[in-house]
Length: 164
Image (cartoon, rainbow, N blue to C red; front, side):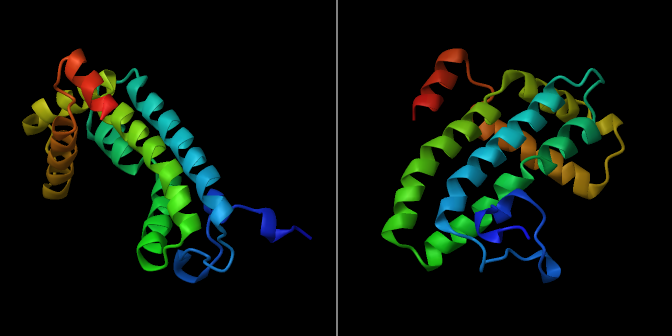
C-alpha cells in the first residue's frame, strides 16, 4: 500500500469529487517542490512553443501558451487562498521563498523574445485567421500582457525589469 503522506498532491490528478484540491492531504512542505515542478513544467511547455517549426498560429502559440503551467496554476491557487484565509508564520516563510522564484519565472517568460515574436506574429495577422470572439479576446489579453510586462523594451529595459 502506498504511503499517501509522502505523495505531493499537486503533482498528479486530484482524486476528489469534482477535482477539488485534496486539502486533507496538502501539507506546507508540498508547496515549494510543487512550485518548482510547476515552473519547470511550464518552462518546458514554453520551450516547445518557441521551438515549434510550424508558423505561429492561434493553436500552436496562443492556446498553447494560455494552457501552459497547469501544475503551477494548481499550487498557486491553493497557496494564495490559504495564505489569504489562514496565514501563519510558516506560510509567510514559504511565501518569502516563493515570491522571488515565481517573479523571476514570470519575468523570464514575459521577456522571452522568441516567445513574444510568435505571439506578435499571431496578433499582427489575426484579421486573416478567422478567430472567433473568444479567441480574439484571449489573443488580445495575452498580447497586452506581454506588452505591459516589457516585451517590447530594449535589452537595458528588460534587464531593469528583471532586477525589480
